Image 1 (tube, rainbow, N blue to C red):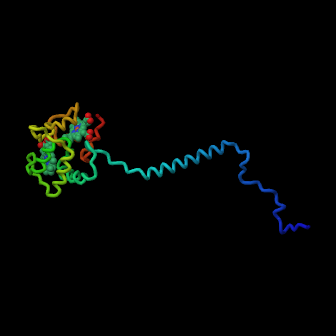
Image 2 (cartoon, rainbow, N blue to C red):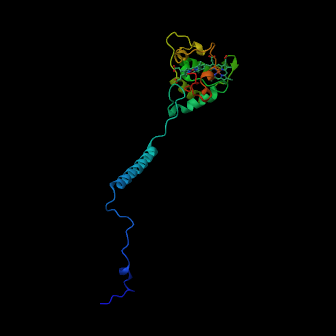
Image 3 (cartoon, rainbow, N blue to C red):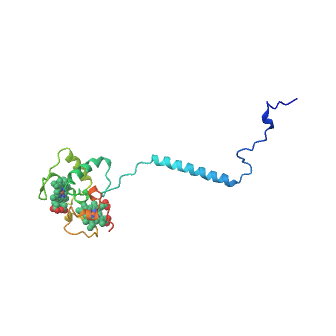
Length: 187
Ligand code: HEC
Ligand code: HEC
């Protein structure tokens, strides 16, 4: 039978070389592909894992981290008691000092406003949790240098006397941001 070339032209075309030839490839290429592939999977998995991790907690600026239910108290405290000088971390004075200072209009020779309710209670809750009590018969300190808690937080630290609310920033440069953990390079 006569073969019609116009109908079956492909039969006469030279055999095409395939784009990829897998036979007799060196195993090196296969290995490289495998390694690349596992890198991709690894990267994808690490991205996915990052998305699922909880956000990193804020840096602890004071002695203890502040749990979410005390953040409002902390904020109100910093706003109210940090307007004339840096807000002092509750841990530096005993609880009774904070109670007296919160209730007293006469403040070291200055007049301050006593907070209104309910703010004062929210701040009081916060200050109570983050400070410690005085011992039986122990006098309530009103100056930092007389507070054994302030002194306990500064073991072997030489601080010029008298210690004042202005002196903190010399060693705690972030004190205005209520961060007493960041120290100057000296330490
Ligand atoms: C109107 C400004 C003002 C406000 C508001 C204020 N203070 Fe003061 N505070 C002062 C002054 C002035 C001093 C005295 C500084 C001195 O004598 O060296 C002082 C001193 C202190 C001291 C004594 C530090 C020391 O050892 O010498 C403490 C503690 C203190 N304040 C805590 C607070 C607290 C807590 C609040 C909020 C209830 C507060 N302050 C709000 C002005 C203020
Ligand atoms: C002469 C430098 C110096 C001065 C001034 C100073 N501090 Fe400190 N403070 C330090 C050093 C150093 C530490 C760390 C001590 C340690 O961990 O052994 C520290 C630790 C603290 C801590 C504990 C921080 C934490 O969470 O570990 C608090 C709170 C603190 N200081 C508050 C204050 C306040 C408030 C003032 C100002 C009235 C003040 N300091 C003034 C040097 C100073």
